[in-house]
Length: 252
Image 1 (cartoon, rainbow, N blue to C red):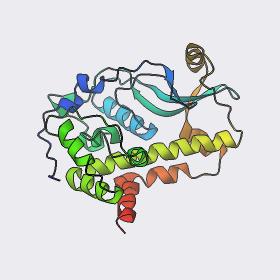
Image 2 (image 1 turned 90 degrees about the horizontal axis):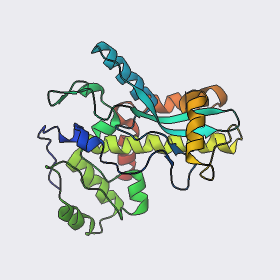
Image 3 (image 1 turned 90 degrees about the vertical axis):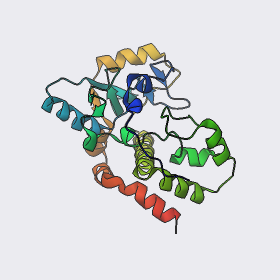
């Protein structure tokens, strides 16, 4: 696989790229109690949202960040936020065709232009994939030829890493963090610490409750109510540590 080279066209950061999701919001995630409260511009973890809010203050503007993925807890009447997003429909950090927070950008930005190759894709067999908006990436026909070769997981990951470098590691890291967050949510549900609202309840009813009652991050809830070292896992995600370990173990 040829190495991908970014030509700095900026298309991945523009509004038409960030708002190409035609899915209806708010809604429940399929077969899940995770509620998609707000249409995402960029999906952010809590620490990423805080970093970008601090950067916005330094640049002299207000950044409105709202919950994206939420679990509404009927037992405690609180919303546990798994991920956040900008309320704005475009990225306010994208200025003069450049990212003004490039060294602090979120994982969802670091993974461009990749749209496939996550842990969930590997498990599902990559039967469906979305072609990147990037004009410098592979075409649908090129992807079809590549995936049609029926290469094994180890070879696929190796080729993706070779082509995209740290962008592919960012995709894996983000996916591993999402998997861990979902595992944390399941853990507190299994312990009976929360009673999540489920898709059998009306979407608008849940939306009203989320707006009415307190919102806290899933991380803060985990720290307060369990002995799991959630922060330790997050700190270890610095420098894409989990993704690098995943690739290393796969290549053994």
